[in-house]
Length: 249
Length: 111
Image (cartoon, rainbow over all chains, first blue to last red; front, top):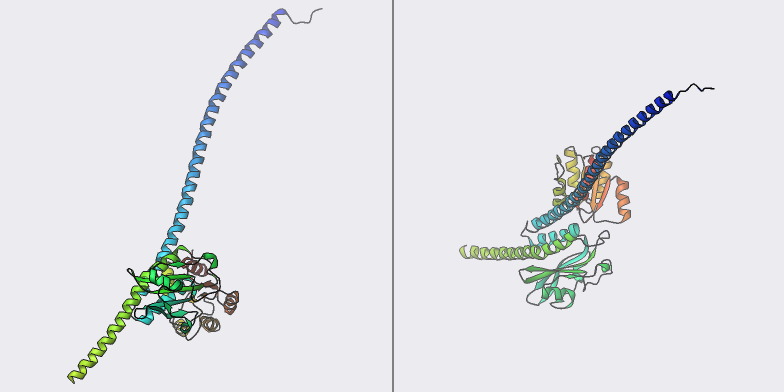
């Protein structure tokens, strides 16, 4: 009995199978090569993506730095505006009372002070006398001898006094202000600003406050001094004019 | 320290500032022209800021004008009283220019 498949057919089939296997192996090798090449490309893309991601992060950081810098510059700008307005106001008049009023306004509106006093040195008696106050009765503020207590010491040394910040809302003592700033013309102290308390909403001192204290120490002193000299010279002038008129009439 | 507020407002484009000495002067100026916003203190001579707010809200012109109060009075009841009288914003001193600018821009709907 015969199956009908000859040896020749079998050999033919085997040859074809071998050829197919060989072709498949070749195709497989080609595909492997292609895959390897694509893998290389993917690797390159991945690396480029990594670079881009790093650049993106760096740009984001730069952007954040610029934003922070912008906020800082805005703050500096506003601080400068405060200082400019304060300085401009202090030198806008030669009237002694007006200068006192302007110092008061700066302390309230720009610093947020609630209770404070401006003391001037009386060279004859070597004491400090309150010439203006806010939130305190001026007449009840004591005359302070130079070198005595916080106020006297600030006036004699010319150094600022800053109380500890955690005592900012503590009950006040007129002899011991929380902050005391000398009013100086060069090294000569002509008075002090004594700050006892701040507005309820002012809970801490910020950098511009210290700048304003420095500005007040110098500019308020010269404004007070020059306005005082001016009013004295005006008074003398009118006396001399009156005297001359009397002589010539 | 009106100058500081004027300085702050000068940083907002196309805003012209007219200053008044007190509440009475403010009312007089409000009756003479059309204004977009009113900024006032509470403690002022002759007529205080709360009276001014009340008179503006009950007046014929500028009934709906946005009103900003800038004051030393930081108590909650003062704020509530001012807002109840018709103020739109209540800012406490010390004056912070950026706060004033952003509130004015917000009320005037300026970007």
